[in-house]
Amino acid sequence: MNPFPSAKELRAAALRCAPLIHLTPVLTSATLDAMTGASLFFKCENFQKIGAFKIRGATNFMHSLPREQMKKGVVTHSSGNHAQAVAKTARDLGVPAYIVMPETAPAVKVAAVRGYGAEVIVCTPTLEARETTAQSVIDRTGATFVHPYDDDRVILGQSTCAQELLEDYGPFDIVMAPVGGGGLLGGTALAVHHFAPGTQVIAAEPAAADDAYRSFKARQHFPSENPQTIGDGLLTSVGKRNFEMLLELVDDVVTCSEAGIVRAMRLIWERMKIIIEPSCAVPLACILEGKVAVKGKKIGIILTGGNVDLDRFFSQFSPNEGQ
Image (tube, rainbow, N blue to C red; front, side, top):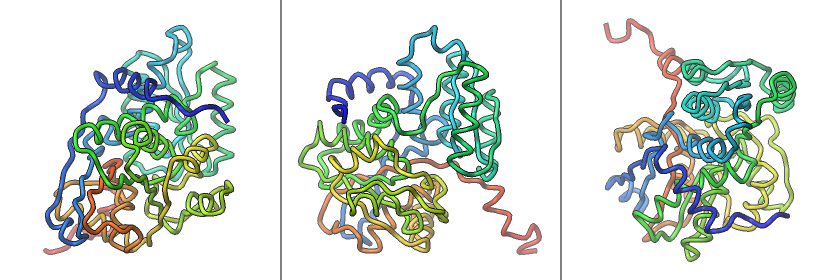
């Protein structure tokens, strides 16, 4: 196992990314504090560029590459937010971007990727199809692959989110982040490890997509098996490098129900007046379902993004409703 990135590397990533991303706000809610008995601080990456934390990892990765290497462009596979992040960063750098997206990706995210000028290549919704299609693009163009999560340069970029949260609002008793591929979780755990060693890191995951939970408890890496969850940003299996960080730097992994995710998302929409994706609501759902002992504690929660497919969301309503 290679050594984990150092505190110096985390600080360098923060300096590299700071001029290129938003310093996102941290919000609180007296209602949610009263419901949980805790002091909750929500780091709002739904207000980040492209509407999600993923811009951080893409920015650090791509701005770390030699300019000559960038000329042939970049390629990635993603269901949405990472795709947008790579597409936007490539546009800002003036290089081509080739984005492999599953046919099930939310329409709002596909449209955003194309809006940034990237070429979208659609594939069937399996990891094998994503990887095979991305490799064919690399063979054809010579583009550099930007992994969605399983790369230290991406993880370092994601660490800047927790670095900001800790610097501006710490110390915390617990910091929570949702886990899919594990890029954000790995970056969060690294930031806490180096800059707030007395703080616990707890990952949150849908019970219907619980590969990180099963892997953590067994201390053995299990892939995701046909996950079916409203939290579409958390469908991916934890990456190899990310799993190493999960085992060494994370204190616990907890899960929540689908109904809990919907309830938590609705509470955030109604009480905090902000739009978040279902995946963002998973940490709060776990708290509300009693999976984390938070009473009397100060909790930092990363809200990962706000790119909701509104066409899909509103399609359940009749256009003549209420008339």
